[in-house]
Length: 141
Image (tube, rainbow, N blue to C red):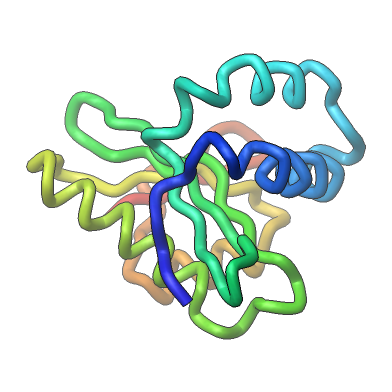
């Protein structure tokens, strides 16, 4: 088991995750989002960590470096590998990026209906920073 930066050869496997992720979280495949991922994959590589188990990617996290914070974009772990602290380990990898770049906050937007994500982030000491509209929350620590 290891966490590592995504590589170019991971594209096919990560795109499978993106399709699953989009189906679950956005109520069906969003061809525009998938197209954007495919088009920008090479640029995104430096901001994607994958969790690999038995030489297979079982989870990933994306992040962006902002002015005062590191923003967590997408986080997904295959359902059969959940409850094994993989998401926590991926978040901690991004926490290391925050420290490396001397940023003040680690930030994430979560849909209000995604109770399991909210529970995970709160367990990791994220606090609600401010509501973001009717459907999502901004969390940070």
